[in-house]
Length: 263
Image 1 (tube, rainbow, N blue to C red):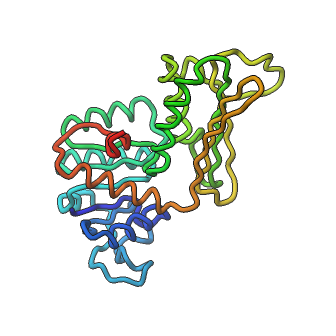
Image 2 (cartoon, rainbow, N blue to C red):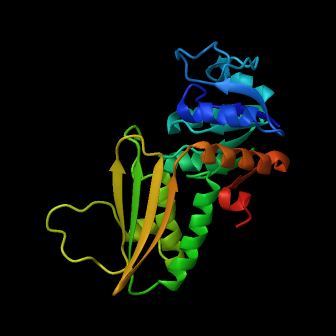
């Protein structure tokens, strides 16, 4: 399968390039980076000391040479890449977070023409955690206060993380409500007592934390904590390649990692 990587000069892009080069069923076909980047024109494997023959480019028409694009960039860049994927009938794996409603709607429209896996977290472990949260929330649906805690590195620009939001959505759906109707995003000053049935969010940004997430179910006399901690971005890269392989026989449709993993 011919793979294209967006953000080829970044940390996640390089992790994806390395994983693709080491995957027996994948071939690195295209490496994209933003216009004006110092990486344009370099070999995509230069950071590994490898000559891949694939030069990093800002020409989106290069996607005509790929079967699937994997994108962990920023919403505005991902949406430009999405248009190019539709133009060239290229499947897409989107791990970018921070989309607004219009961005999500654009992805859904594009998925009518090309196959897309769109997930806030490509980690197999995180998606197993989401399944555990669904089970826990259905059992602990009364008498428990839920808090979603997440921590990421200082350079992450959106908050709460897409994974934290998905965790909150999973609990809310299990309770039969919509997250925006029950979410508490901030607390400051005299907040009063907590309202039953709400879901709170707490965010840390600092250092080089790859990604920590914990959902607390706080009851009377007990507390249940479901936690996932990432120590390397490699797990996101491996999950992304698994998602790309899932799309290989799909012409169109919008999927997430729960679909990829059969959950």
